Length: 420
Image 1 (cartoon, one colour):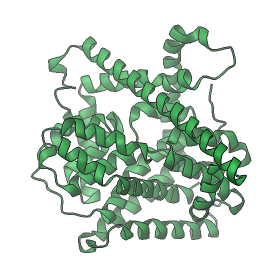
Image 2 (cartoon, one colour; image 1 turned 45 degrees about the vertical axis):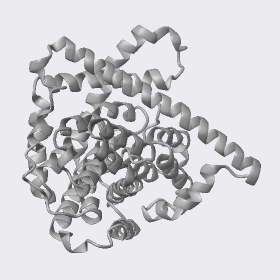
Image 3 (cartoon, helix red, strand yellow; image 1 turned 90 degrees about the vertical axis):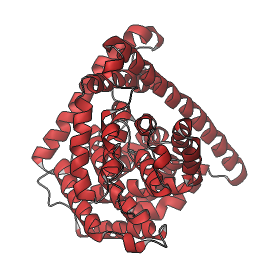
Image 4 (cartoon, helix red, strand yellow; image 1 turned 135 degrees about the vertical axis):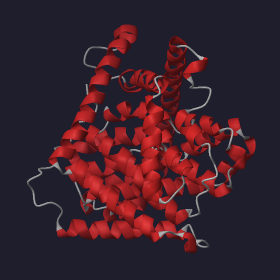
């Protein structure tokens, strides 16, 4: 059962974006690029405008393909349908273990949204075990390196983060972490925060329209390279040869050192751990937001999320969200930043019927990333467990990580907005 009511699919026979939508696209693009440059006051000479232009052209083309073309809609729809089918298989396992705990017709977020993460994690483990994922990571990473002007390490890292997860990805880098400088560490950490892991995609598709989840996965990858090229430009160090190791995984994922069923057990427990962690964070964040809203209403007669909506109101309007809906949209965007994407997606589900399909689409694209304050601790902790010095380094530029990754989400929303 879908938790989120699907927004109507855009009519491909329409005339496309209106004049004002193009104006908002230009305003949004200028806003994101200007804010990115603002964070890089000393190193403009190393910015490679050619690669930024290439990335934006490719990203716009992909956005049109996925959101407007008949072939693209069919491809995205097929991918989404495949995940929907996987969710049905995952539900069979969940029902067997927890079936009696949910009343008929009721909805349990943990059982219906988080538990399928376990099954998707197992599938990722199998694909890693049969060595298919390394081929995908190396293939796409090599192509990306030619488009984005960055090194293979950075490009492979983007694909690897999206597939295996923001924390698990760093395990394959543990041998070269001591040799990476601050700029490289920022790029790797920002990439991990700007994308989402494949194991959690199915959970998102239970909350927002699947085609926007698929589109955001692709757009965020290119938006990440655009923003990083402005915020953190540097010459790639192709002497770092462990990019291949990143693609192929380390001894934790090498099938020669464990049999198939050991691998299954490892990925089942890893998936369950992710589900429990997400669940625990939701309990804490939602309870905290409820408390803060109560205190704000008692003191000022208005809740905290409403106040945050005013702060993000101009940003929402620049993205192309109608002024009559910008306050509600701004509140959801703020919620995503200060808590996490799941809380924001559930809030969107409550008011989606009151918003236009365009607003729902833009917000959906914006929410599909790990760009929030809680991710600082997750990423820094993962790196610190492997190398304390680099973990402390990631903690020091934590706010800049959230800033950059939020710009990535905004850029993806800007580009999607002109195509929705």
